[in-house]
Length: 179
Length: 355
Image (cartoon, helix red, strand yellow):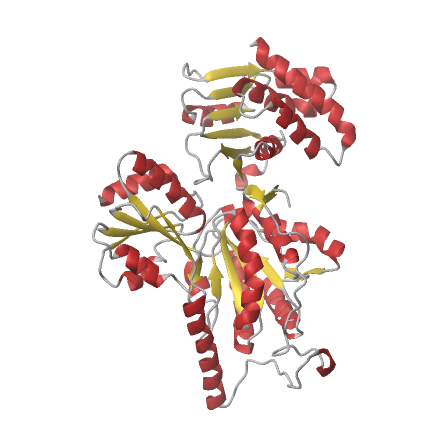
């Protein structure tokens, strides 16, 4: 069984980080994982994306044409990548920046205004963690315990930020339920 | 040790330290700058040295100097930077000084691009610089294998007193995968008695060492080249590495592919298998020496009708495959060179054109 997730958005939205956190959580759950970043010139102020592959078998191609899931944090990413998502996958949309849907009826579309929720929590920088938690809650790709452990590990050098990010995870779970 | 999630570049850096290599000289270039970024922090923790040269040419002589002084040393760069190092690497080969050189390839020629490529195959395996010399070239296909090859590269360089190259594409450097390192630092002392110019009191033998690649006497130069040739012949006998995939099936097409490209092929082979089409693969892990015998044997079975070189370069590996297959089967090529790694779907489509 293999799952692929593409994370995409603007450079600076924390796209690479949430991909890494998911890959780390899956690794701790015993899966084979790979994380492939875009590192081309488009990173300079443009689109940033990464692909995470999670599998119970050794991973062949880390290069994925049709990922199972997409987390789109801005409109260009949604427009560029949503047609490639596999039928039956989860398609996360950052509703704060994307006023449209994917127009697909064969995927599980989840629209969450993560920027507004992050502002309510008091720190707009947590928007990416809210998006990740909402996506994980909806797709069930890893357990919520593994995700929390991975976030704690990621912020182990900045422990002050851990309670805020735990709140962000709870907010993400909550948002995934409502819609 | 537990698995850790690391970028290939960082894992390569850590593997060098675990190999007891505490001397690193380099100049930054995408897509391998994370090696230096990692080591600038890590080397001081283990009492090692990282010095950024003023250019790759300077770096090649820094590693030459460190090696001549008897130190275990390595450098990393990417394609254009490796070209600049070619002079110093040729001098090291001529003077029989070991070192490990990592090339995380980007597209070319010239400045090319910064995305993954395998365009330096010829350079690494045939013509790293002027003069009659070869590098032992290992090509990892995963971050874990990059670590293992790095840890093998130092003893191999010292065994042959010759530079060893780890040839990875940009994806091997940029990708994160779980890796496991052996515990602790490798404490095996470097036996450099045969070449180090470290002072007689530091060595067991009474031999006076002279590091040089200049031999004005024709006979002496010829002898030096014969010595080098004997080493390269020995590498061909002892250091061939490869891995088979799906070759116990009655494959019609045999793929030869290495590095990241071979993983894409593996997925394509699985896809085709589920559609009832059998395709086998030989993945060279050593590019020099090339697994000639294995490629010939694998191509020479009755059910195999064609051999395909699938690479992120314009058919550079085709020549080695043709040399191996010796005209017994046709050799076809598929590849891309701009930085987009071909997808499994593209490989499947190509293989179908051969059936």
